[in-house]
Length: 61
Image (cartoon, rainbow, N blue to C red; front, side):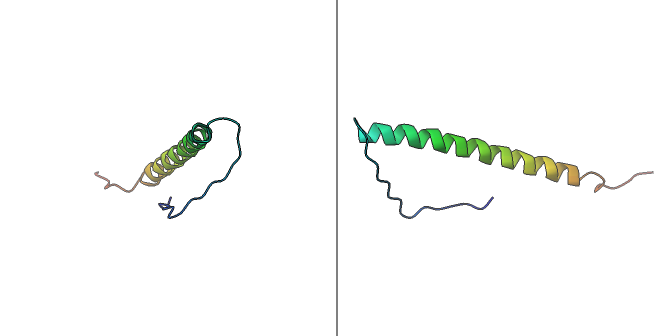
């Protein structure tokens, strides 16, 4: 998966209470979900690469 760099991010929302706390809670929730999906994708890619390497070694008779 290619790396992504965010150069500018602007978020606007209207909430009752502490805006910073609400943003932090929502950001953490969604970044953790993204991280789980990313880790799963990496694990699948590694597993697939491992399966592709079967038979690539030398055969000794």
